[in-house]
Length: 294
View 1 (cartoon, rainbow, N blue to C red):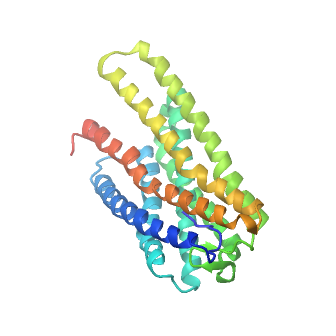
View 2 (cartoon, rainbow, N blue to C red; view 1 turned 90 degrees about the vertical axis):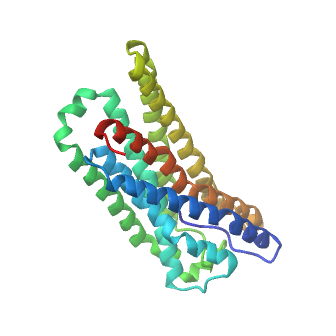
């Protein structure tokens, strides 16, 4: 998840935030690495892949991308990294992770809604569903690469105060800012909320027509979708509020923006762990039932 924090100043705030980062990021790395490796192990043992598995695997790859480069963020908290092309690469990589996660979770929400709302259409497209899922995942990464390539100037070293901090006095390019806020967050969060609430409503309404194991399963799925929706909102809303504050506020608000963004960025990073819990271990239960494995 990309860090667009305000520049560090000479108050005690950067020192406190540095200690904050030293404390909170190592657990995210350890827990995230464990859960994602476990999830990868589950995927490797799948006997049959569906379109849902493809979306989940794409999400796993996005999370892994964040986890494997997270040690650089931890190192920066202990010992500042010299400004170089590496910093631009790290920011681009983390930026790609966050928005790949956002777009993939959005695609999963749409997929679930269509499967529940239009089951006959889903069955009719069953033979093409895997190819559709693969195409969507490729499209997601293509969009992200194009945006990065077109706006990488905003992440060059002359725009950075430290390896993970942009200069507050250097505002993001307006087009880049609007892409991040509208295409990268506002549209996806509205889709996730709309699709999730409609899916939950349909599942709950259908409970009166089923009994026993089916009823329990649908209740569990509704609960998982609810948790996924709130996790999405909690993880990704603060960082985009922070980006907005950084864009519109002046230098006198530097301390507040810096603190807000640092905390918001950590919250967004925890999504790498929550994805594993919320999605991948659900697959383990489903595949144990369907495939007779694990």
